[in-house]
Length: 327
Image (cartoon, rainbow, N blue to C red; front, side):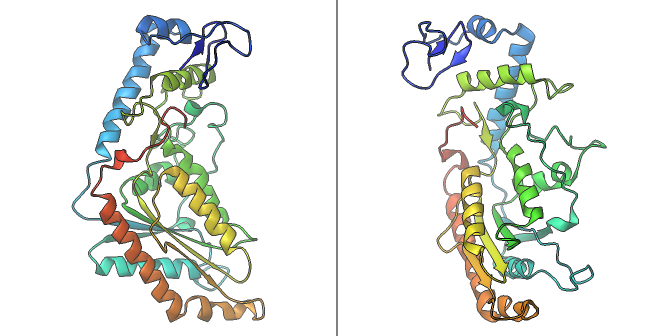
């Protein structure tokens, strides 16, 4: 890709002149001397950038290694619990649990993860500064430290170990639940992020901008992990939404677009919306949205995700293509 040596900018279009300074663009030879000069870094930092790249390539290769048993997790975003304020259990969680139970009868290892039971701190929006300001594991809440939360310490690894992920959320004000939104925001660390260039000062903005440019220059489409690594890639997904009235289609669309962009795969008939009616009182919702018809639909979605998960295992996880130079 062409670069401007004066402005230290990288371009993706077939430009001849830099639109900022008018200098002639060049197609660089990515030697160590060029990288040090263009990025204005020394040998030590260049080595660190290369080490991160090499380790991420190894991590990408491990994505193609599957354990014998298929693992499914259910991630539910409802606060409702019979011993809490609502005095009722979650309907969306109920349907996800029925789907997991169906998978268990088919030999799948399953685990239900109600997000209300975990301490998930809000995303600090590092990614918007520059791609490599956001890290994996999340450096805002470092794993294994006093600052670490359950997203860093527990849930990232649960996601990494799953072949199937079932997402369940109620309709809250025409949108996904607060818990599910917090979970999704923190999943940005799984969606391409790399190890910090400076572990002692991970939010070194100037250095991370240079690391981002290094990744843009060095990412190779045919070498998974040579750029950014999307860790949801090759996982099968299902969506379960419950509600009293409008909003289910918007939730499903949002979840589908987000997790498909993260790299997840959706089988045919992979979502459901168990809805009640505005003509009924909300106290009458539960017998409707947890009825046998919806339970059967949940089981069908479970079987569809399992079929897809088995098909996905027949191909290398890293065979799925995306632009790994741009997170």
